[in-house]
Length: 303
Image 1: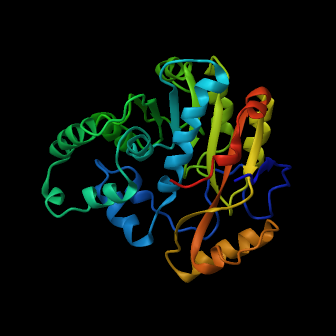
Image 2 (image 1 turned 90 degrees about the horizontal axis):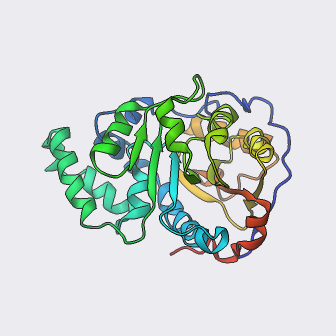
């Protein structure tokens, strides 16, 4: 599938808040589920809304990892920074023989609803340990939600994890040390909560060439981040052959705001937001030489 092209970026649509830390106007807030002691409330809340973007990201991120060594010539496990990592969902899907459906079943199970957080984490360590794939990545998690990051570490999904908010503060000494070996940054739901400010504080501490793969809601401008990445020598491409459903709208007002936002951006909501779902675009940023060497034609083929 070819549909990936270099993207020229328009100005942020009026009212979209380009580099604001707030998400799109009219978007339902789920702040109360992002920083719980464990992921059960997160999955119980999002399951009826068919939250699915980590499923779409799973094969894309795996293919990027598989391509990394041939393109870069660097052998050994790749260190991934999962930005806005929450409870380690992307790490679970990247490194283990599980699906997003498996995670929904696991964390909405009646028996597990009665477990303590400590007991759940203990069971998770055994569960994911038995399903770990060979040649996996080292996943460092970063999220302002400290409880969620702590659970990602306790469950064994995150090699390292940092509960820091780089929108408002410089990275800690410990985080800057952990950033040095990062070669792939992944984001599936955080753009809009994090902006170019976070990337400006991350990139100087990464020692080698880095790739950035971001799924970005069509209601949010990615242009300021693209400019920041370009300043670090990365060229950004946007997948144009398809978009990725993120979740169902929670109510008609949320849908109306989303439709207005994509139309203000010069996009058509037909078959996407008009059909009842948020949709995201995939952006891939890499050094120019890597972009030229990497065969992107099969990147979006679903497994």
